[in-house]
Length: 192
Image (tube, rainbow, N blue to C red; front, top):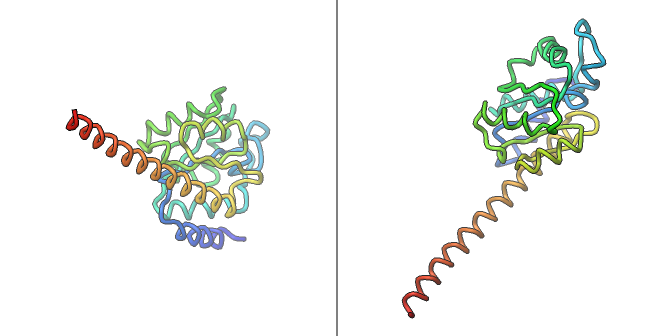
């Protein structure tokens, strides 16, 4: 499937959702491309997973911000590959540095740089430990097995919508409980 076809399919999927994330964050190794940067040379021409570029273009066309969170120990190679693939300008933030924090530091920096709340972000990564840690921050996180593709995008948007709906229901419950609680307190004071 070519980039244009993937983009069209991704745009169709995006059109099916009423609520979209403000920012989508991607890991690099085995998420956008099928290799580890540290096993490659800057002289090589990298390639992306077949659907990755089309998904990026569709998100960008919909006005959704993009960012990178990578724990690559070879940030220089990763940045060179991003340049060679002509995708550097697509990303509002590129946090590429080695870390033992399972990307929580990356997300703190992305949040500071973009101002986007964690619960308005969607994240794709191939490592479960990163998914678990970042999910605890309130980010909707999707584990990918064979890179970002149309199926992963649909899964991510579905889970993001579920998380937003759950959050809204919880806010409503809290508001209802709080407003009832203040009414009953007032009634108790009147009866005293």
